[in-house]
Each structure stands twice: as C-alpha cells, then as structure tokens.
Length: 174
Length: 287
Image (cartoon, each protein chain N blue to C red):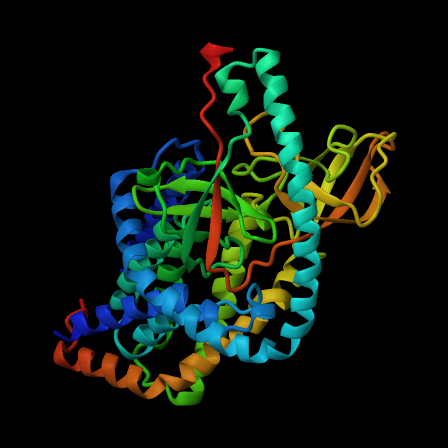
C-alpha cells in the first residue's frame, strides 16, 4: 500500500516538473534553472529505504522521462538515475542520515547527475558547449532549486520511505 | 556478491549503449508503447500546464500594466500602417492571380504557398538542459508530420521532431547544431531582399545565445539589423517565417563566404500557444 503511495507521489512530482515548474521559474531564468525533483526523490529512497528500491525507481522514472521527452537520445536518464540511486544506497543505506548529511549528499548527487548527462550528450555531439560553461549556466543554478526542494520535503520524504522500509524488514539481505 | 554486482553493471551498460544506438538510428516512426506513454502523459499534463499558465499570466499582467500605454501607442501606429498595406496587398494579390491564370499555372503551383496555421497548446517542457523539447497537443490525427515548422507570433521557435496520435514534440531552434546527427539546417534570406540574399542557419551557440548563419555570398548586401526570414528554398520548410535580426557579420572560415550571427526574435520562456505551419502536399507527378 505504501509503495503505491510512493509511486503516485513520484508521478505527481514528474508532472509538476514538466507542466508547472516552467511557470514558477522566472522567464529570464527558464533555461538555467531546471527542476529534477524525481531525481531528488530517488536519492531520498536510497538514503531512507534500500538500494534496490532506489535502483528500480531510478530506472523506471528515468525511462519515463526518456520516452516522454524524447528529443535526441533514449536511455541516458534511465541509466544515470538508476546508477546514482543504487550507489548512493550502497554507500549510505545502513546509516540513518541526518538532515545536513542528506542535503549534502543530494547536492553532490545532483551535480554528478547533471554532469554525467552533459558528458553523454557531449560524447554523441549533441551539444558542443564546454563543461565550464554548462556548470555555470545550468548545473549550479539548478542545484539551488534541488536543495530547496530537498529541504522542504525532508521530513515527509523521510517519514514516507522509512515507514515503508520498516514494514518490510531486511528482505534484501542475502 | 561483488562479482554479481559487477556483472549486472556491465549488462546494464551494454543495454544502455544498445538503447542509445537504437534511438540514434534513423527511425521513421515511434513504437506503440512510446506513443501510448506519451499520449497518456500529455493528457494528464495539459490539465496542469494551462491553469498554471493562467495564474502566472495574471501576475505578469499586473506587472506589465505600466507599459500598456506605450504598447497601445505603438500598436495604433502599426494598425495604421497595416490598413495602408492591406489595400496595396489586395491589388497585388488580384494581379498575381490574374497573371497566374494567364501563365497557366498548375493547381499544385498555385497552392504552393497556401500555408495553413494550426494553433496548438504547449503541454509540457522537458526538464533536461541539453534537450529542451516542448510537447504540443496536436498529433498525427490532426495532420501533423515531422519536420513541420512551429512559430509563435514573434517568430520561428522550432521544428516538429516526432509525432504520436495526439501529441507532437517540438525541437527548439536552440538545439540547431551542424554536428548533431539528429537535426537539419534551415535556408534563410533577408526580409525585403528575398531574391538577393541567402544563407544557411547552421548552428546555435548557447554560450553567446546567437544563431550562426553561414555560406553568405561575398557580394551579398546583408547588413546589421536586417530581419532574417526562412527562404522556403527546397520546399521542406515554409517561406517567410521570421527568425531574428542580423547582429554582426564576419568573414567565414576560408575567407570565401561570410557568416552572420543572428539574434532570435522569439522567446522560449512561458510559451502557451504556438502555430504549426502546414505546407500543402506537393504531388511530384503533377509537375
């Protein structure tokens, strides 16, 4: 039951990202601040639930994004979101992260996510910009939006994912 | 355990490369799961995008109240100029039709520039900095096809890249890139000197926010502040769509041609309504 609730909330986040956030972000910053709320939710699930759930959520929502906003490539979001979610889980799943810890992990993960996506597009020659420019143009400005979002929903997200992992204790320990 | 993880990672990586290779190949149409997912998502997203737009638009209107007076003055001037030009246009159009009759134009030739503008609502904007695709709520059921031009009232914003039955994806003109395997170049000319000037819009630099127009002839009389429009040569893209203004001109790479940097006329933020330009079907057999 709780898993259904997580899925519904994440689909809602996905829709907000594409349909409502473009209106909330000021017109002049439209191409610089880019929301990645679903990715933040995946990292939350890696921190407070378990790594396999993070991998599953990351791959499926990344794939949803790849298909729905297909422009050049199919697959990068799915791959990168799943991978970062999984390895955050491998590193930090056993410790109960504090607020400061969670926010800094999310910050690093966001920078990593945007950078890897940028380099994938760069390798396939879809963008020709330099990394330094991309970092200042959109990776760092959108980091602040992601951090604000992570702070705002830290308490409900933690409660949601922890409640879920308590109801199904340690079934992934093989 | 560790080996298993490594193994899964490798399989995932191979799968990822395979999927990317598949999507880079020249696909004519999307598979049905893709179409279904997109149509469903767009159906839900359109309930949110438009109301959010109305609310945001209301606050923007309040902020813009002060400039309304000046804008009104300008519009009145434009309206006066328009009514003068309209009379002139009617005469010229009649003359043109008469001449076409006399020269025995075929039906296809007469209808060649008879574009239809389909109005579409934007449904969502991609949240990927390298792929700012827009989704609009018209699809192949409404006669939309890939490579149609999409404009706003200000100017060209992009081209349709893929269609599903109820939605279409617009690749913005800011993704224009010579080296990219997924995008074409657009032929352009200058407003007022349509048969003298010519250039090819080849790539957009996000760093300077300007479009590069290449292959301009040395003898071309193009000047700074000229309005750049699509030329329609090749009959893929319609002619006469405003793109932007020339901002500077330089000698090109080999010194034989010129390049110009073009500032876009349209803005990509807070888009609601866009127009898809439908070019009449050309029947090759009739010519």
